[in-house]
Amino acid sequence: MLQRILRRAHRVPEAARDRGLGGTALVQAVIARDGSVVQHRLLRSSGVALLDEEALALLRRVSPFPALPDSYAGAEARITVPVEFRILR
Image (cartoon, rainbow, N blue to C red):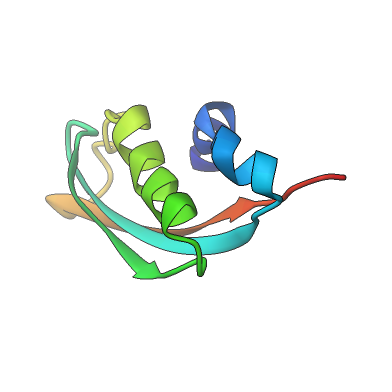
């Protein structure tokens, strides 16, 4: 489900597309029980600042995620996801 949510909101910045820039950024988010993103950070750069900024913006854009299930024991969940930006020619 998480991948589907992120895929739906994923965008390649027009400036990156125009310049043929691609890469993969690794981002991490801390999600509260209600699904809100309470913290996010870049763990590994894509090598392109514009793409790194968009990867973090993606996490803000999809917040809130669905609430954590009652069966989940923790007060929050930490997720780490790669955000890939591919330029198809």
